[in-house]
Image (tube, rainbow, N blue to C red; front, side, top):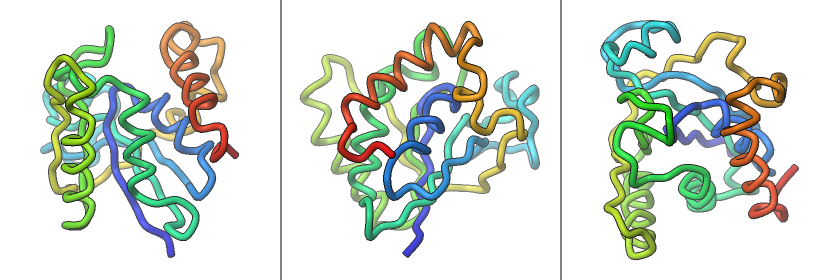
Amino acid sequence: MTQQAIFAGGCFWCVEAVFNQIKGVKKATSGYINGTTENPTYKEVCTGETGHAEAVKVEFDESVIRYEKLLEIFFSIHNPTQLNHQGEDIGTQYRSGVYYLSDQQKQLAEQKIAELQPHFEAPIVTEVLPAQIFYSAEEYHQGYLLQNPQNTYCTLVATPKFLKAKVKFEEIWK
């Protein structure tokens, strides 16, 4: 049965690329969530004024991969202790968030944060909130990392995260 999960972990290029390589994930889509502007554009979201987070909607087959494993992957590919930024990407649109679609997802996300917190020196600041409307990002953002590996940002930031995830999750990599 196909389920959905929505995560925000900084720039969506890397998060989307990693999830699209995981067995059991049917599709990961870059987009925007939990803001106030209808149908926001990338340019609008980048101002920080729409309130949206850059996020990834993950459609997955629960008989192949469980939500708990998706949480493990998510928390391993970004720094959940950085408030409103990831590395040099600064702004509320780069916040860390789990946007749940059920009470069970909320409970599992809160459990994962409690389990991980002792392993971090700083507090985990990942927001765990009900998902509002998810807007897909513009087409050129979909699959961006794998289509644009020569992009300086991809070379310096996204590709190293992607390759680290490939090694860490080799057994479930497509």
